[in-house]
Image 1 (cartoon, rainbow, N blue to C red):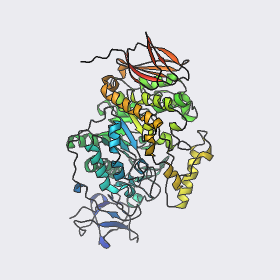
Image 2: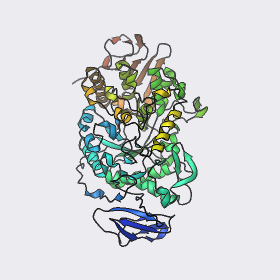
Image 3: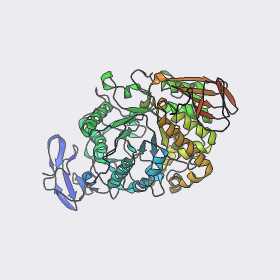
Length: 584
């Protein structure tokens, strides 16, 4: 009996498989799983399901291909057909390596996985360890950020589909670059979601910011949990992905004794053992809760890492001076210093934006600094600004270089957003391509409401449905050849190389980090073993007391090593050694 088309469907009383135009009755089995004994055993098949006699077939919830979009028929895909060439690839695991976040649709002019392969050599020269792809699962329309996906097992066809995804991962691995995939399990997009016609995948009356919540703890939730866990394992087994970034895990409502995140981590660890290579999960969370990355033996969920937005906020405020909304608590050099030493700024402190206390302190004896992924820019922090403006829209070279130093010379796992490394001037606004006019209108109006609390001018918000908004987000690679951009690119390349060359910059121990700073004079010294990272955040020259004998990297000319101090120009930064350089 073929299991190619088995489907879980507890709601309908009758299910018919439509395969290559042929109607094949299905039989209900144990656990509300339906099978089709007379279904095709091999070959490519376009198929769907008729539920309770409805005339229009709907896709498979576990569809591997949607060549005609999320409302069309599913198509079979054999993940074993690809001849992998990445046997020599050895993943370093999550060890503080540099992550490069990219959106396939705007990374290249063509916006496909195959065209992105052509830019991998550039990333090799930059020195990144991993690329992190924004969600690629199937969504309605031709382009969006990826967080409106509805078929989690299918790769978006406008990107090239699943075969192209395998080619991309294979090509990355052959060049020594790992792949992290951003996945969304906290909600489904508004168009093309047929899951509720099959079974109670979602919880009625339970919703989060983006829509109905996944049914993780109600009746029939065992199958739903298997559904999302199998999706995680698919990326590892069928696509050779090294790690997953789990979107907004704070929106996963689960009151069962074993949280779904703990199940994810256990399944990932088991898969890692079976495949004989490191695999890891990184949570996006604004909870500042170290339980996510604490080991399961200590009562934690056992995830490898989590994002720390506090680092971004502290750097952003100290470089830009913006203090609206959630930035208000970070208006001090001391906030940046605390993030470096404690990991979180809000670790049980009062959050004025939330109007309550927030977070919990990290136990540095059991949690590594590498378990926190940090950035100075990312898709959310740029795209959720009114105009989608990058730091390059308001800051010059000196402060952009400072941002690079704070990120790449820090103790955490640094992440870059595509184009950041050369100061890309192209914006990255929120964009959609909903075919339904009413949905497009509602999306545009919703974006305007979201910006009210941040105090941004609604007149500067581009229409997400306008194709020009999407086009504006595509990187202009010609900028890398312009002197001003090439200068910043050189800083990023040098910093990444320095991170590889200097063991102190790779030390994940919070205990090996110390910070001195002056609130009045606006300078900061980050000490990492025998290295001192000195940053002048003010707009005048400063002399900073620090023993340094060798400058390893300087972002602006004019620095001077003096007895017991370093003189830095305005907005300058240096990485210096307190020990003389030893050569043999």
